[in-house]
Length: 99
Image (tube, rainbow, N blue to C red; front, side, top):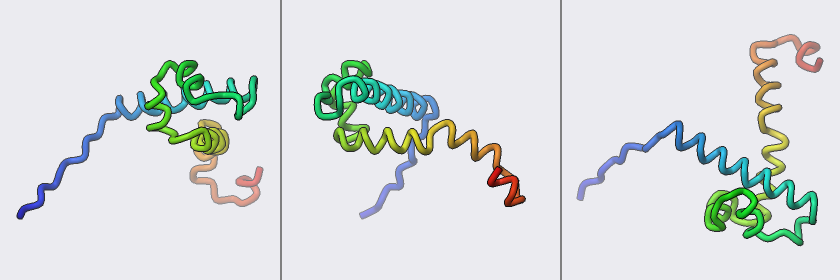
């Protein structure tokens, strides 16, 4: 029996679209959670506000708990974090790194 090695499909546009969808879901969830509280918001409402299907929310985040994890991750390691890393790239002076 032979095993066929499959080539991994990589599409930059598709990855960017998926990331934009994840961020749209997180943005919608953050807005609804802030306004009404986490327990009062449903996945269906988040999906509707993000303009995606309910299965898409579940596929990308799994649950409200997954959405909360995503919000924390995006807040801690999102665009601001990447900008900070770029500023620190190549810097070796400890005092300047702390600064």
